[in-house]
Amino acid sequence: MTKRRVYLDHSATTPVDPRVASAMARAVVETFGNASSVHGFGQQARAAIDRARREVAALIGAKQNEIVFTSGGTEANNLALKGVTGYHPPSRVLYGVTDHPCVMEASEALKAVGWGVEPIAVDRDGIVRFEALAAQLERGPVRLVSVMRANNETGVIQDVKRIATMAHAADALMHVDAVQAAGKIPVDFVAWDCDLLSISSHKINGPKGIGALAVKSHVELAPQLHGGPQERGMRGGTENVPAIVGFGTAAEIAMHELAQRAAHMRALRDRVEAGLRGLPGIEVFAQKSERVPNTVQFALHGYDGEALLMQLDRKGFAVSSGSACASGKGEPSHVLIGMGIDRDTAKGAIRVSLGKDNTEPEVDQFLAALGSLAQQPAMAGAE
Image 1 (tube, helix red, strand yellow):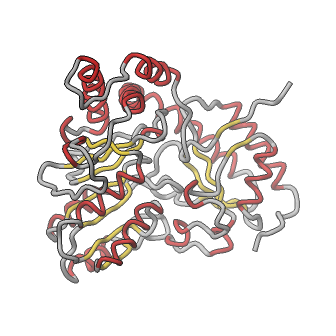
Image 2 (image 1 turned 180 degrees about the vertical axis):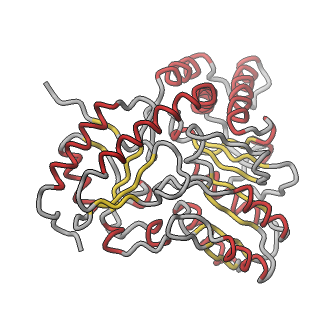
Image 3 (image 1 turned 45 degrees about the horizontal axis):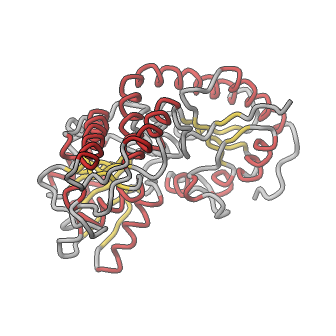
C-alpha cells in the first residue's frame, strides 16, 4: 500500500474544494453561452458571472462593480501597476522589497518607459520601515505605492492602512497585494483605504487561471489587454465562465469558514513551531511579527534548503524553500535577503504552509521526518 503524501505547500497553491469542483462542472455543461451574447444562453452566463462577482466582492469588502476579473494574481498585480501608470507621465513607483516577484518585475519593467522605481525597506522582522518610506515619499512625486498585506514566504502582515494613509498624504495611490491574505485573515478594501487590491482564486481552494483586481471608481486604469468591452473595458476577452463560477464559490465558502479555518491552521502552525523548537540549529523567521495563521518559514543551519526539501519530498512531505514563482533558481530568498538575513542562512530556508484539511498527525509525521534528517550530516550543497 502506497504511503499517503502530505501536502504542506498551500501558499504555492491549494487543492480545489469539492464543492467548487461541482459548481464548475455544472457551469461547464449548463452555462456554456458567451456572456456578451444577448440571447438567453448568453444572459445565463452573464448572470453566473454577476453572481460570482458579488461573491468575490463580499470576501474582500468591495462593491460588485469594483471587481475586474483577471487570469490570476500575477495579471491583477501587473494590471494595477502598469494600468495606473499607463495614462500618466513618468514619476515614481514604490514597492515592498519583500513583495512577490510579479510585483517586483512589473515595477522594474516600468523603468523602460521612464519611471523611477524604488523598493521600500523592511526590518529584520519583515515589517516596512515607516521612516524610510516617509523619506521616499518626501523626495518627490510618487504615483503608486504597492505593498503585500501578507508575505508569501514568511507570512508577515503589513499595516497597509497606515501605509495607505502615508501614500495618500503624498498624493499617491495605494495598491495592496492581498493574494496571500484572502481566505486566511479578514480582507477589507474599504477599511484599508487602498485604491486597488489583488486576489487569486487558487490560493483559496478555487481553480487556477482566475483572479481579480478591485479598483476604486476614481482610479483611471489603462487596460493591458485590448479587445471587447468585457470587464468595463479594463480587460478584454471572452470570460472563462466555469473558472469565474469556481472563484465565486470558493470566495463564498472562504468567507463563511474564515474563522474556523484560521483557528484550525493557527493551532497546526503553533504545533509545527513547538516541534521546531526541539530541533538543534533551527531558526524561525519573523517570529516577532504578526503573521497569517498558516505559514512558518525556518532554516536548519548547515543545510541547503533545496536539498532538504527534496529529502522531505522523498519521505512524502511537500514543502517549499520559498516562493513557487522563484523556485529552481538556486538563489537565496529575496525576501530573507531583504530582511537582512545572511545568504548562507537564507539558502537553508524551508516554508511550511498549512491548509484547511491538514491534521495534527500529519504535522507530527512531518516533524518526525525533519527530526530524522536533522540528525544526519549537513546536506551537500549548503554553503
